[in-house]
Image 1 (cartoon, one colour):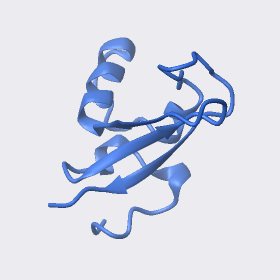
Image 2 (image 1 turned 45 degrees about the horizontal axis):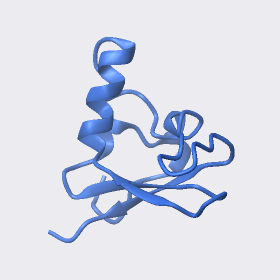
Image 3 (image 1 turned 60 degrees about the horizontal axis):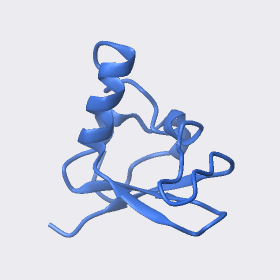
Image 4 (image 1 turned 60 degrees about the vertical axis):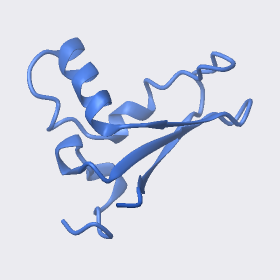
Length: 85
């Protein structure tokens, strides 16, 4: 997949993301936004689930998000963004 064409959000897997991508997680309660590096998240998921996390869908992360600022776990969302190279 090209840099500008990541495919449908629900089918995007961590293995599809590259160094120039980031995941921006946002909290609707306090409006906090955090930028996560996919490689770091993938490594954490691999440790918690065992094995290779490259086949885990990025959308599976959404239900596990917790805001660092207010602790909210409901309706948090994310966007995959392309970083400047």
